[in-house]
Image (cartoon, rainbow, N blue to C red; front, side, top):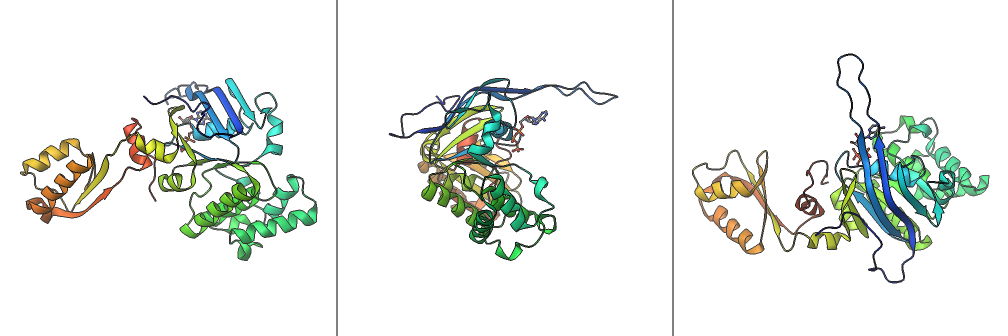
Length: 340
Ligand SMILES: Nc1ncnc2c1ncn2[C@@H]1O[C@H](COP(=O)(O)OP(=O)(O)OP(=O)(O)O)[C@@H](O)[C@H]1O
């Protein structure tokens, strides 16, 4: 049975709670349509969310488009008022005192157009100043962060003249300049190439390792979620449908392995073994994805590689469960979780 929430856990002995969320509920009101278009119904984007994030933890929010991740983080950062529920960050009640949030956390939203006119270095320096650094210290801190992220060469360029990935990296640079005990990052690496992504993950990890920062992070990227996060809450329809370590979540799907069969064109229709497999497969274009016990997977591989189907097969892979498999096993819609 999967818990519908991520309540206090006793797993991390001696851990201190940095963020405690209880009963968080938010409904966006519906709109009456003018003219001929249809009315927009109200959307319950947070539906009784409970979470605890420990100090020094990198905690992920994973889920498909529209699951309610951004709505949740905007409430965690004091930017959006919940209808009901509580948010306690480092002991501060952020529903009652939302203006305390900027002193406690650095937030990277989904789009950071407000700093588009600034140069990369001025954006970071300004962020440092806003976080209370003296001018010289802000300049030094900005310089260090930009170096750390490999942004030195772009320092004098205005953000609006950068590529999408570069701009996102510059926004991360501004978010990480000047210390805050908590980082809340909404898809920090979206649009970035692998080098930039690695720089971002190292920079985040360094803040946790050297300064004990707590990180709450929204991501669509399943691979990232598996490698950098200590715990993950999977959201769907405004609810936490699972919450655990990546390893703990994977154990929900038992020892099943995933078999992907990619066909050149169409698999041989007359093969009865394939007809049975087709019933169990998730089919996407030429790809069939099956979740099987290791024994059955071995038998299927033997059948398709030894039989007449082999000639029609372009590629096949066997893999241990990923968080994407967990998500599908939990009954999610299986869309919007990107593998990269
Ligand atoms: N300002 C708004 N007014 C009305 N509905 C909204 C508003 N913002 C979000 N929603 C709806 O609330 C739900 C949750 O949206 P939210 O942006 O929190 O999802 P998300 O998980 O962050 O999605 P994505 O991965 O696409 O960024 C969606 O159904 C969305 O359409």
